[in-house]
Amino acid sequence: MQREEKQLEASLDALLNQVADLKNSLGSFIYKLENEYDRLTWPSVLDSFALLSGQLNTLNKVLKHEKTPLFRNQVIIPLVLSPDRDEDLMRQTEGRVPVFSHEVVPDHLRTKPDPEVEEQEKQLTTDAARIGADAAQKQIQSLNKMCSNLLEKISKEERESESGGLRPNKQTFNPADTNALVAAVAFGKGLSNWRPSGSSGPGQPGQPGAGTILAGASGLQQVQMAGAPNQQQPMLSGVQMAQAGQPGKMPSGIKTNIKSASMHPYQRSDEASTAFTWEMGKSAHLLPSSGLKMSRDQQVSALPRDLLRSDPTLSGSSTDTSLSSSLEGNCASLMFVGFTCPHSNYSPSLTSSISPNMWLR
Amino acid sequence: MEAPPVTMMPVTGGTINMMEYLLQGSVLDHSLESLIHRLRGLCDNMEPETFLDHEMVFLLKGQQASPFVLRARRSMDRAGAPWHLRYLGQPEMGDKNRHALVRNCVDIATSENLTDFLMEMGFRMDHEFVAKGHLFRKGIMKIVVYKIFRILVPGNTDSTEALSLSYLVELSVVAPAGQDMVSDDMRNFAEQLKPLVHLEKIDPKRLM
Image (cartoon, rainbow over all chains, first blue to last red):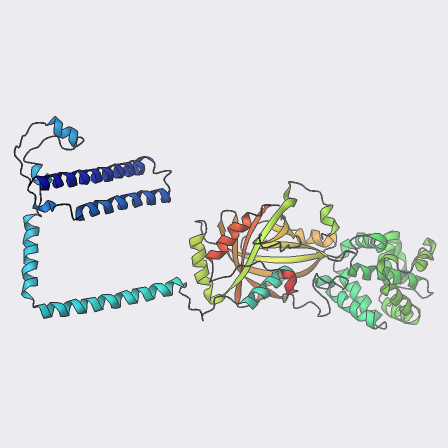
């Protein structure tokens, strides 16, 4: 008996220690939750949980230890009940239980469930006893089967949703489309289908950028022009058309172009065509029958507008025919040369040969 | 690599040193809903934002090898919004340690006579398109999912045609030069969109 009592005492001590540890960590966790909730991190909460679960495990181990006597066989009898405050008890329970009275004893010393629960449990045990062993075995088997089926279904569902609800054969994107779209935003590949097929994206300069609405017409004809020198007239009308599109801005624009013909850094291909026009206009003036409409824009830069208006040869509808005839005769080849030269230094001899009074004749 | 006009440009506000970090991908039309759903979960909690823009790309051809490109963008669904002028530099692929394409980038809000101004400067329009889609943000990251429409009649944004059966997905960050760490965040974000969308750094030069 002595030995058993000692064992009981020892295991009670161990149990008390474990419970005290558990209580401390629970207390600090609650303190953290209540006072540091604003800067509490999820990992630290998990740490606390891990600590608690470890301590519960140790407690369980202590309880299940073979040397631990069965506590349920021990009986606790309340010897004295008193309605007065008990300071000792107060201290031991940390102020939770001030009196050891008939009110709190049934709760604190309870070792059995409530009578109703006990009744239900009894009912269940009698039910279980009534079923034969075979029937019970069958029921257990069917329940197990159902559970395993259910588990299988759930895990299958999980696997499917893990792969994003996307079976591998169902594609959500197309790499070729990606490339096409990236190429489209990067340099307009496949976007401007009205662009002449001969021209190119920004990657290949030097070719006419004829994507614009205004320059579109002249740009196209420019390309033709390079191949067939006999088509000046459509080319010219194309340029006129383009210029007519913005009549108010023309004079200043041309001025810039004339300067840019030699060294303007913003030189671009359709300015080259204007510069070329200018060249052609001047060359036309060298001819006796030069009633050139094209030259008019050039003179705007050099002459007052009134002078231009008073000059009958510079206006009128007959210009186009005289233009074409004069050009076909003498200037076509000249123009062509002027056009194909690099714009920075085209036909310098021709430019220098024109004196101002030729324009003012 | 840059055309001279930009390096000679007066620099105000220090915006010239901003770099755009970019990852691109696409999603097929029928998977758009799933992607939008996922993005709404992943991104900052904000009202879903859509946009409908008209972008015009202008070229200025000099004697240099490569023309100077500017992009003008206007909103078609928000009247009165400023136009957006954007310069993008040559994209750099970088090495494996940088997970995004990087390019110089200058953004300016402008008035609506921007196209006239560019034309007067000698720019010519190279191409244009309409972009329609959704916009998401997560911190400094911007995610746009949009469809590109080609414009059938020049200048008329009413008659358009979808370029492909996919939406373009772009994940971008505009940050000061040298902030390569942002590309790590972008990579992590892109990982979360897999396998729905594969966002990659795509060298546009490869597609020319």
